[in-house]
Image 1: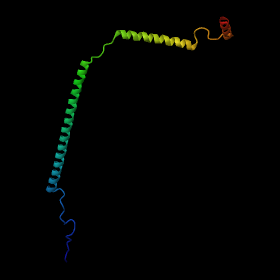
Image 2: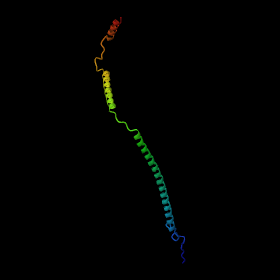
Image 3: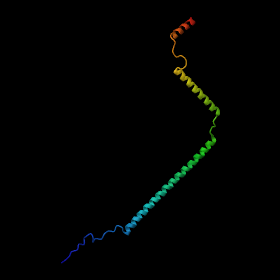
Image 4: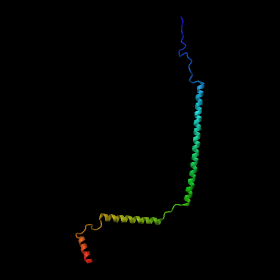
Length: 131
């Protein structure tokens, strides 16, 4: 009796090694190159940002110096008590005038009803004086 052995069975085929030393070395090299690239890019960005910060700091110092020179050249004015007194007086007068205007508009002062025949009396008295 002869027995046949199937040599094409997947069990008997040589299997491909996924985690071979060569593949791991290649993955490590890719990882190293990627990390080195990110590090170089980060250093480049930090250098550029530092240059921008230095320029901004120099500009700020220049503006602070300009502010100091302008403040020294043009000192702030001191309050004048006479002007404050004039302003208080003018505000008082304005309040009084507004109060008088309100009284006149509301008709609180005197008799606001016209007397009968007032216009006729006025015309008669003016025509006698003129004629």
